[in-house]
Length: 105
Image (cartoon, rainbow, N blue to C red; front, top):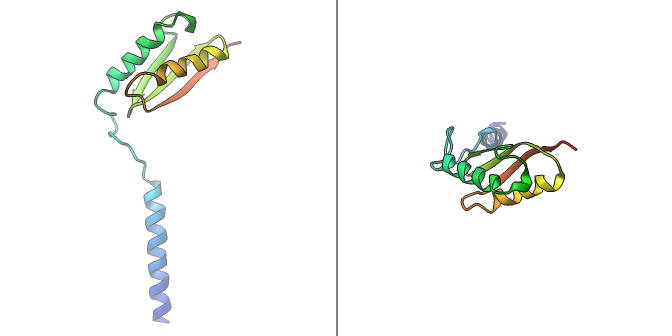
């Protein structure tokens, strides 16, 4: 019986280790983001504001965390939504774009 108990204990340890490690959230740069995230967000915001077809300046709000850029706000058409995402992706240093823009029409 003790042989089986040792096997079960080992199996349980492996399962719990895997389960607990998958529960931990991975944050590359910590709670406050990576150095340069604020500058990255400003650069993306400026790039989007230069495209007059994307609406009034600052109608799309940009934030950056861990080199991931978040686009928030409202656009008039679906093409503007995809254009804003494309512009953000072209900025050096952006690893991913989360497009939370919604279309009003």
